[in-house]
Image 1 (spheres, rainbow, N blue to C red):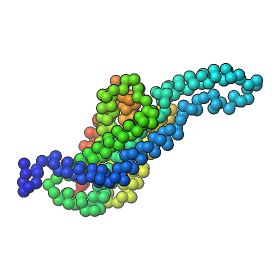
Image 2 (image 1 turned 45 degrees about the vertical axis):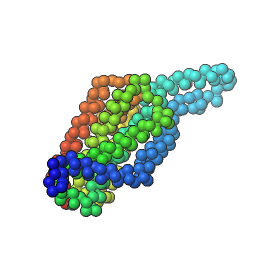
Image 3 (image 1 turned 90 degrees about the vertical axis):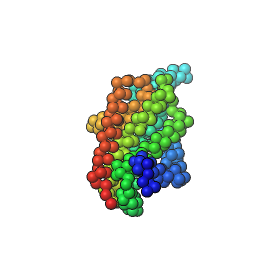
Image 4 (image 1 turned 45 degrees about the horizontal axis):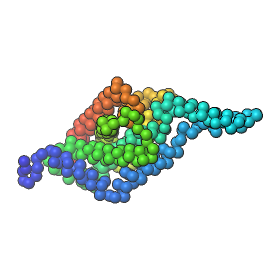
Length: 302
């Protein structure tokens, strides 16, 4: 239904605001190229491939080997190399759950890309306030909750698109899915990414809801970025982290997202752990999205 030519459907206002946010992304080819292709290639190609941890466990990495007298025969060197290859495979499997660190890190990179995208969700509110657009929107019948939900929805769509591109590039670079990986598993991965992106974007949005300075939001982003990434299992297992990082990782949504994605892509599924991961992420998304909406009703003003 319409009144004075304007739709009274709240979904119409929500989608109009969301589409406006998305246009700033997909109509900027340079930004689209940098964030969706160049950045994942750099991270996966340089950081991922450079961290060749499996090469550490080899016969050539033993400093005492050249000191053996008499020198080992060629057949003995071959046998020693095979032995260390078996040891390296077992160590990698016990530590990372897979024999390929690149696959381990690539799945963790999905969570990092989502985190990186969500960090900038609050910046759009700061820009809208400074440019005067927020005042115009607040003068319309559009609900204030729709303003926040449009920011969240825009961030979620961008995060999922970029995560899909990262996953595809990682597969081209050598990501090896586990034997239990199916299309259903892929849908589960994106369900986990959806939940964590809703929660993270809500956090950064309600932090910026009263801010008028970009510097404040940038400081918050820099403060939360590295702790959320490195105090998680995105790059290394929490089992080998020094105290108190495992405690922080146990309440870090990035850890639960990465654990769910690794189970669905790489490792055999532990249903109890998977249910725990999705329960945590579901509660995380609902609680912080709810807080963001409540704060929008109370504090979002001209």
